[in-house]
Length: 83
Image (cartoon, rainbow, N blue to C red; front, side):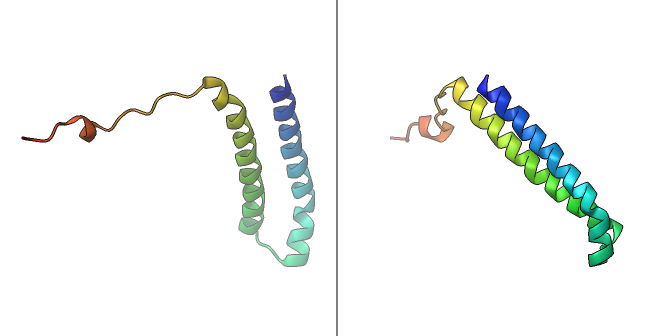
């Protein structure tokens, strides 16, 4: 249940952040002289950072539930040395 609440909060934060960035784009363009490509990079960079954080939270919640699995032994270790 707490995972759902945490994921919902993270999704809300992503939406809120994108709303703030979208609102600030005209000021960024006007005061900094940013081109359309620069504004696209601004939006995409913020989106990627938040999505990676959300993926990290989800992975941290899901992976421990699967438990530890043994790591397979390398093939070269199974080959016996010639006598």
